Image 1 (cartoon, rainbow, N blue to C red):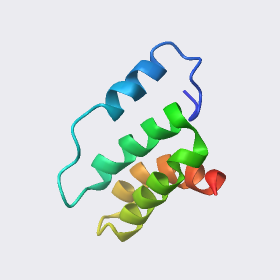
Image 2 (cartoon, one colour):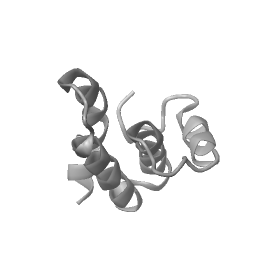
Image 3 (tube, rainbow, N blue to C red):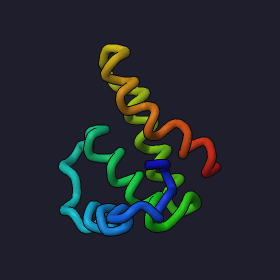
Image 4 (tube, one colour):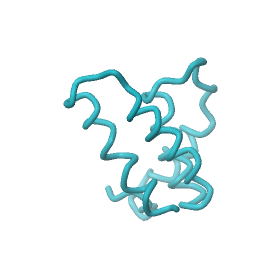
Length: 85
């Protein structure tokens, strides 16, 4: 699946379900923010998702984690965050 592709069966429904989920705990973790940002990207487009993608990227950059853990999430947010702004 390519980010932004809604022609794959079930992607739109999954993104809409993710957006309808209860809010994340405070303070949010990258694992809470990244899926929501990607769901917003898939349902509303780049312009609407840009702030959430940037927030997710900021959380990931501030993460006190080893390189492997950070890389696991960074690839999901860095491209869409750059493309949207």
